[in-house]
Image 1 (cartoon, rainbow, N blue to C red):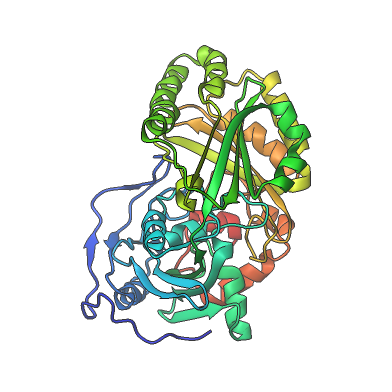
Image 2 (image 1 turned 90 degrees about the horizontal axis):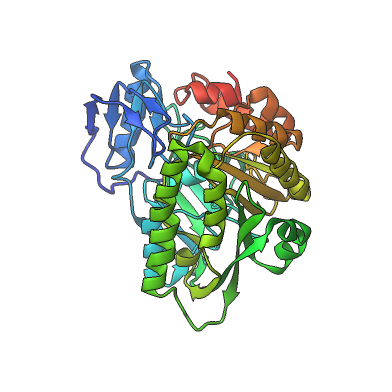
Length: 455
């Protein structure tokens, strides 16, 4: 594993910008809180390295936190909380090799907009872009794709600070040690070190044509393999208590560009998908008996539409209604049975569920702890409105999903532990052995990592 030359970007000497923490940190959904001893906002790699070494000397754990969009306690710590918002921006663009190297604290939104100005784009992305690049990749954030995989699968190189304060780089073309680190650290869960920079594969910007339309659930499930095979990016949302879905198909287009008109975009994306949906969920939380009727209205609220735009304007959308979420990756071949079992469970129960179930796909990849590692995958995500009791629903759904050897998204709610993961991830031992070597004293440990990785 190679050690890059010292960075001077943003250097302010050896003094690390830190302060004693006086208030609790909370994640986006508000279901996780932590009270770190101190917070550090390094302005350079040197300052970050100094903060890690200082914490280790003081016997404190260290965790980096991005935008807090994980629903788990992946970033929670009672030690030193690293905030990377000064470690942002593009370091370099290599048009010959089709890569961009970006600082770890850069929000995906800023990266996407900066790439678009340069006439470049990621190949695939998730449906929101508020996360930092390091937070999104470290937890396995993904979109949907027949041939193109998660954001982490588009990584070509990584730089990270280890527990000993070393700055290491790795790539798929390096030494044996570098390749082993690369195979694990692309989705590293914050367990191997603190990522400081990421090199992504990029390509010349292109156009995507989106086709959104309602479709009966039975038709979606009957035609699922055909819909998946015929579209580069296919996803759908099933509304519990109904037989209705909204489907979305994104495919590359030669143009012309035809974005969503501003007025209709405001009506559908802000007024209906966010504003009215917020009101509906608030009513459902107060009066659960109204939820089935609301679901039927919600499933019919959005009409069919088509539009063509640059990738991030098609892949992503605003999500202003807060919720909690559990998502599992199951073998793609098991998706139809899984959804039918989930629907049957909801229909038999007295559960009242106001959020749709989201289904996406990804091809197999070669990342040790990727939810799509070594198998073609379908994702099933269940949500509940913030403040609504979710345990019965999530527990029942999890029983179905784990029966199909589901792998939970690392940044979303689940109850699985290291014993379970050792069964469903063939390369689990490879990851934990590397962790033992890089962080034997668990400087980057916390309760969540103890549960999912063991100790």
